[in-house]
Amino acid sequence: MAAVAGSLRSYRSVFAARFMLMLQYRAAAAAGFVTQCWWGIIKVMVFAAFYHGAAARQPLSFQQTVAYVWLGQAFLMLMPWWGDPEITEMVRSGNVSYERLRPLDTYFFWYARALAWISARMVPRAALMFAMVALLVPLVGLRQWGLAPPPSPRAAALFVAGLLMAVLLSGAILMLINLLVVVLVSDRGPSLLATQTVTLLSGILVPLPFFPGWMRTFLFLQPCAGLADIPFRIYSGNLAGRLALAGLVQMAVWITALIAIGRRLTERVMSRLEVQGG
Amino acid sequence: MNGIRLYWRFLAASVRAQMQFPGSFLMLLISQALATSGEFVGIWALFRHFGQIKGWTFPEVAVFYAVINMSFSITEVTARGFDIFGPQFVKTGNFDRLLLRPRSTPLQLLGHECRLTRFDRFLQGAVVLVVAAQFVHLDLGVATIALLLATIAGGVALFAGIMILQATLSFWTIESLEVANTLTYGGVEASQYPLDVYVPWFRKFLIFVVPLACVGYFPVVRILGHHDSLGAPAWLCSVSSLMGFLFLAVALRVWRIGIRHYCSTGS
Image (cartoon, rainbow over all chains, first blue to last red; front, side, top):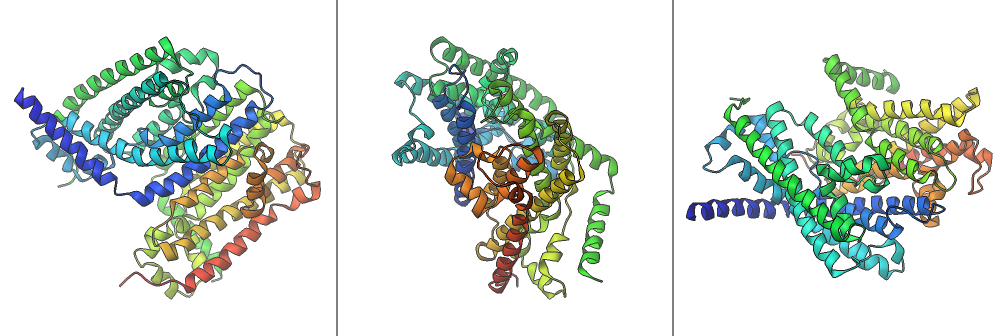
C-alpha cells in the first residue's frame, strides 16, 4: 500500500512540475486567444447564414451550435494533435533510453506528463475564452452570438465530469501518438495523421450531428467523439438524460481500453528499443 | 545580374536541395494534400445537411475555396523568409548579413527558402476548381481564365503583403507574432465563404482594411457570372484584384520604415 501511495506521489509531482512549466508561456496563450476569437466569430457567422432559411428542425438548435463552436475554441488545446514534443526530442537524440532507468512505470510517467501538458495549455485559454463569450459578448448586446449557460445544474455537472474525462481520454490518445513516434523515430507522419483524424472526428471542425445520418452511429461510438462532441452536447443540453450517460459510459470504456492498449504497447516498444545517437 | 535573374537562381538552388530525395518529397506532398483535405470534407458535410448558404450552392462555394487556397499556397511556398523573419533573422542577428549585401532585403528574403511541400494546398485547390467547374458550367473563355489568373496573382500579392507586415512587426517585438495567423490562415478561412454570409462590419473589414474580398469574393462573383447581392458593378469586380498589389506596395513602404528602426540584436 505504501508503495502504491509512493509511486502515485511521484506521478503527481511529475504532473505539477510540467503544469507549472507550461503556464509560463503567457504570450503564446494571449496570441492564441486572439486567433481563436477570430475563428470562432467566422464560424458563428457562417452557421448563422446556414441556419438562415434552413428548416426549423435541426439536430442542433442554433444556440446549441454556437455553444459547440465556442467550446471548441475554448478547449482547442485539449486536442491530442501531436505527440509530446519533449518525448519527440528524446527520441531524436536517443535520450529516450534513459527512460528505461527510471524506477517508474514508463507508461504512467509519460501519461502524467501528457495530462499536465494538456491541462496547462488548456486552462488559461479556456478561462479567457469563457470570460469573453459567456460574459463580455452578451454584455455588449450580442446575446445570441455568445455562449449561453447550460440549461440545468445537472447538465453543468455532467459537463464538468465529461470535460475531466476528456482530458484523461486526450492523454490516452496522446500516449498512442507518442508510442508511434518512438517506433517510427519521426514525428512527421504521426502528427499529420493525428491532427487530421482528431480535427475531423472530434467535431471541432464541423459538429458531428451535421454529418449524414448513416455515419452518426459510427461517429458517436468512435473514441474521438469524447474529445469534443459528447461533452459539448452535454453542456448545451443536446445530449441529456440517458443519452448523456451513454456518452459518458462510452468515454469511460475508451479511456480504459486505450490506457490498457497503450500500456501493453509501451512494454513491447520499450523492451526492444532502438535508439539513435551516441 | 538583375534582381529577377538572381531570384530565379535562389529559387532553383532551393528546389534542387529539396529534390535530392524526389520519391520521399512526392510521397510527402501527396499524403499532405490528402490529409489536409479534411477541411473540405467539413464544408461538404455542411452543404449536404443544409443544401445552400444564402442562395449559394456547394460547387459555387467550392470555387471560392479553390481560388483563395491556390493564392495562399503560392505565398506560403515563396514568402517563407518573411514568415520566419522574427525568430530566424532578427533574434539571431542574421539580418545584419542581409543588410550588408548589395541587394534589396525583400528580394533576399523571398529567395531565402522555397518551401515546396506547402504546394499541397495548391494541388488541392486546383483539383477542387477543376471538379467544381464541371458543376457550375464555367464559361472557360480567354477572359475568364485571364481574370482567374489575375485574381490568384492579386491574392498572392495580398498574402505576401500580410507576411511582410508580420515580419515588419518583429523589428519591434523580436519574436514573431502568432496574431498574424488571424489574417493569413484566418483570412483563408474567411474567404472560403461568399462575403454576403458575414455581417456588415466584418464585410467592411474584408473590403477596406485587409482587402481579402477584392482578391476573392468580387472577382469570383464575376467568374461565376453570379449576381452580386452587395451591388458591386461588374467592372469593379474585374479590376478589384489590383487591390492586392496596392496592399503589397503599402506593406513594402512600411517595411522600409521598419528597417530604419532596426536595431541589431547580434553581437
